[in-house]
Image (cartoon, rainbow, N blue to C red; front, side, top):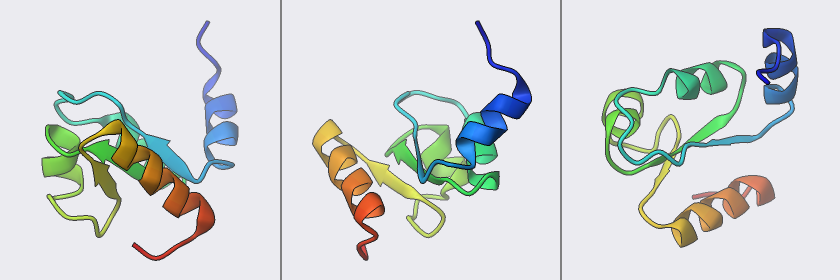
Length: 83
């Protein structure tokens, strides 16, 4: 079952981070939508989200190469620590 759009927006506005786990995504419109709702995107270092949305730098979001690195970056965001 797909949630209604208003429910998605309600949930996303309460989130701090959006974790994208697809390592071969072409662009990632969901990432852009999450950013527009205030989420910090955390994307795999490779593919469209890294090259097209974050423009290969961590100014507009964060990236990871391993699951351990993703965990550490989520922890950093939730603890509000500087990168």
